[in-house]
Length: 93
Image 1 (cartoon, rainbow, N blue to C red):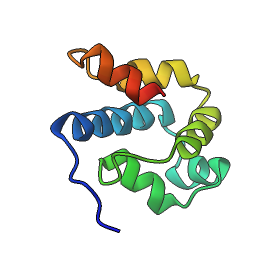
Image 2 (image 1 turned 90 degrees about the vertical axis):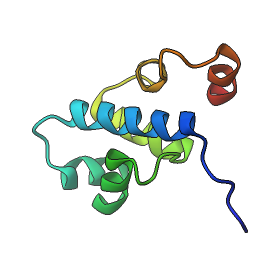
Image 3 (image 1 turned 120 degrees about the vertical axis):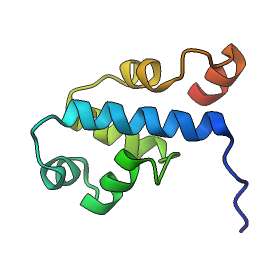
């Protein structure tokens, strides 16, 4: 399967998600947070650094739960402010 290249907006959203997760993790170790979410530390590292800018919904949901974030917070904070409303609605769907 060939993957469609990411748009600049998708890359920016992935970077914002990574920054949000890093900030929410604070002083907690990457290993502890990843284990709490049922992920490998390498998967969390890729998400936090933007190397995996489009993680699966259930991965984001597990991380949000482990970090005490609501999915509404994640969506609002990880979405670039200049994003078009249609793109935000599509991302939320």
